[in-house]
Length: 353
Image (cartoon, rainbow, N blue to C red; front, side, top):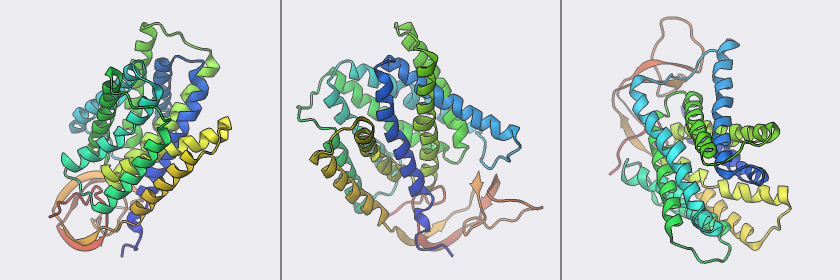
């Protein structure tokens, strides 16, 4: 039997962990941005993520750890190319162009559009199930993020704003397309994305006049990128596997609050009413999501695919010899009809009336 709260594990902790790591990268990057060109820093962060994950990817093979994740297939490559294009190249490029043409306050507010873009595309384009509780929770989290980034100045809708909106749309597309790859090895995917996007941004920054800082600063930026971009992206992809795009994106929207709390600790910034009110709104949104219980009788059609799994209610196939768990191999799901709490994960992407 599946326990009452099994649908929360491990997707929710993975999505929240991704938000914590990404949120922490903002104040840590702020410590470096005064000494490193912003565009160059973006390249260092992504390249650090890619190279760090390459060490993990190849290192686990060198020490003899068995692969428990499904490798990328030829059919995945077009999706991977679009993920790298929209999420690793166009998104950061549009952001840099936008920040150079608009105020910091407008930029911070507009970046909250990523959560809306992610959920809107998941709901309207990919027809992912989104109920009233999820919408209310996401609205509360988004309202908290907007309040947190508002500094009293009017929002300027100028050329820079359009670039930042384009960046958020690119990342919203990226998040939804990444779901197409969520059954494959997330370390391998994030490694490729980091190396390609990081190298591209680094090269472009150098072409346009940026200069490399000392080795210590490069190493610090690479470490922040490995954790705040690389490991965060791996956890985000695993969250997609268990929660679907809309819910993972909503949990990830907590990242600005994490960054604000760390900024208070690192820079000694004051705990303002704005921070407290944003925290309350985000806590309400988080509670609405954790209290969501999507439970109805549903039918699984016959399905064949490959991904990391254990033998549970959805995986009852046989093996010819001994095996360990988790493991990954091509397997078939026979038709099944049952009822239990679930999210739109790999095995529950059915339609709703």
